[in-house]
Length: 216
Ligand SMILES: C[S@@+](CC[C@H](N)C(=O)[O-])C[C@H]1O[C@@H](n2cnc3c(N)ncnc32)[C@H](O)[C@@H]1O
Image 1 (cartoon, rainbow, N blue to C red):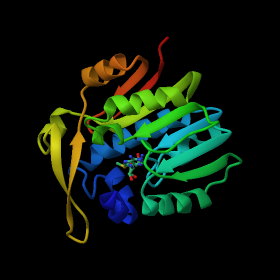
Image 2 (cartoon, rainbow, N blue to C red):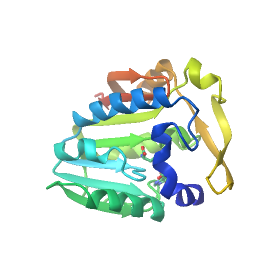
Image 3 (spheres, rainbow, N blue to C red):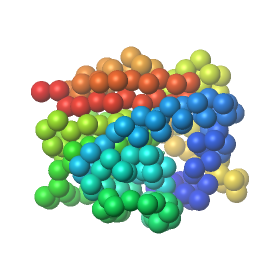
């Protein structure tokens, strides 16, 4: 949480291949363009964005939704996200929830769509807890978009596939975080393990986007 709090003002740089990104700006440009296109076609009803960060994907999906709940445990990320929301021209109802997704309690809510971007790749033992909690929050037929980091020949030149990695802020301050990257087969296996059906998969050199829904 401390890492994301401190990184919040510079977080979006990663989408341009800067900051903690690998030095392949063209790959970031290509994948961001492809995935914003996927977001533009995603979401309906009440959408929950889990670990929303600065809300980078929000402008692309928001007009498909009636209500959006943005969840993050980092106050500073939510501040950046609020700035983004102020610039949007939308009639959707937007609500912020600050807290740890694993501890937050949802009483009456159920969601028709869920966006989970660059969140699951930070989980190790909690993966099962995450998918099981997500399932309980979804309406029948809900759609899910999972965006995360790809394990590709380009990535392999700069990163380890899984484990504790160092992230450096502009200030020079360093943090150790857990992170993993996924090949297409990893995405398919993980979704199958937790009973999600894969509807489509975009695999780029740096990012992937998996559209999925619960299988019954
Ligand atoms: C890598 S960022 C991704 C931000 C955003 N989804 C995006 O795609 O740009 C991960 C975000 O998840 C948040 N986060 C991490 N663990 C969390 C938890 N247990 N509950 C709520 N938010 C969490 C962090 O604060 C951070 O903003």
